[in-house]
Image (cartoon, rainbow, N blue to C red):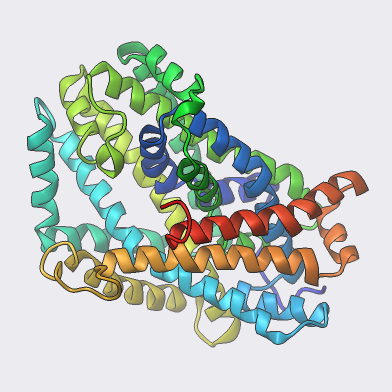
Length: 453
């Protein structure tokens, strides 16, 4: 398939890997994975999660990168072009269109959580966590959620941070930001892990993470691991596809995908080790759930030596992870606007930014002034957007891409892009055609509450 018009390309495989890893390494790894490990009993969940990454996540990421590089277009136009090449119905374009909207909807509430993290950087640096206990930590967080103006300031700042990068383009914006932020993220992570080894209960943390106890592994935990393997790699929304569309032809998709998946998973595991070492050292609850980052960890930071610095570094790391992920959420929509309208990249970025800023205002109000406003099934604005995207749009997007690559695209075109030998290709094809659709369907039914309850 020939490239249409001039499109920017990543300057190197390294740039692509850092950008795509930045997309994958987000709040899902640093916030969600540790508390999921805690809630689901630790090490057995980790093993299942790792298996899911290799059997589901890597083949699906290869699929999405392959679709993007083959199309050389934004996800919406790309799926249409690929459908025409395969002489398939033009309706496949809606897979790409849905991905564009999913990214925008996700940023609408993602920026609110990222705003909380920005606020907690200041709290940690100013010593607000010193000597704090459980009730005080909960009260501190609840009071913050009750102040919409304060949340609006941080939400606005994060939107400006995100769109300020994207507006500069692929090389000067996305690539340059990730080349700075990702090494900084890894450096901070190593400092946190080293500190946890020195002052935390690292041996108990390692035992919790790596000594399997399959008696604690329930069917619900297995499906949760499956779902998180899918979501942790930013699959199903077109972000990986549009990044793949900027990838040079000579780069190996399989090898690069494995590197990205290992980096993404490694960050989640390392941050889990660091967090649980501090949690156990302070006799806190490992299964604290979603409140682990904003209510449990401040207690640990407030009672340890150098807690102000370590807490600040931790929330700075989370900010970097959220920032690089947010950049990828809006790139598909901005690529569509610049390729289909007369808007410049900067104009497209700020149009998207204003739209998501307004959506974010509605989301942040759902925690206070509009907390009694329900959209569907008794869910507030935040929960509605979260369920709509993570429960419906992303699984269906990933399923559609897997089915398209596995059943619709011509075999010679897929093999041309992947560059795999016949043996590895047959394994990938079996995973994409049979394992991935069944796994995604199981996740979809679980998230809808059809199974596992």
